[in-house]
Length: 267
Ligand SMILES: [Zn+2]
Image 1 (cartoon, rainbow, N blue to C red):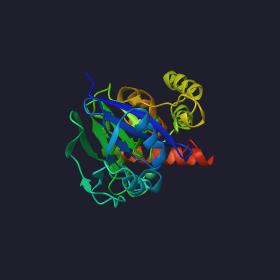
Image 2 (image 1 turned 120 degrees about the vertical axis):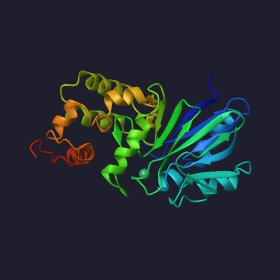
Image 3 (image 1 turned 90 degrees about the vertical axis):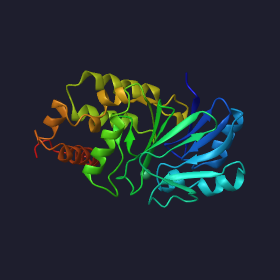
Image 4 (image 1 turned 45 degrees about the horizontal axis):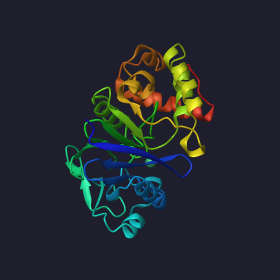
């Protein structure tokens, strides 16, 4: 049985914050609470007490609310962030294999996934939910701002090693656009076409739609080109390149170029 409840809370134009409520104690963790009043309202609406902040990475649209939230919520006594990431207000820097509890029963395990930032972390909660920040998106992947294709490949390998039924809660609602690229990358994949129609139908939680979180690790294995670098169709997209790190780089470059409208299939 699940020890926690996850509430997604939209912020800014396309960010997701989350409230993780430990069911036994009603103590809660706020994930990337960039909009403190909105996350406090979610806590009040669910009769929960925020004691903990979980920060995936130092970018302002994820960590920019930390200090203000701590000032206005006296029950918060722990602010987590990745080692070396310079997260504002951080009291506990964490890395691979660290674990701790929210409330009485909700265990959090840390996955160190540097690349998008130097100390980006994902949080694997209650052996059933993973909070991926700007590392894995639904059908997509964060920019390699501070890292290499090798680091992102390693980060994805860690995430894809979790059980297929793990719920995936991401940092941004980019799903429809990501699915369009996925269809471009694998034009003969019927599953992706269905996924794109689904994403468009769901719309965004930020503008009154249903949103597309959570995904699952199993769905990402089927619908995320960055999770499919070992599949034949993605290998074909990469010109049959047989180095998987290089394929990760090529899919990223393909997405960036496609976004700018300059993609050419012949390399
Ligand atoms: Zn970011």
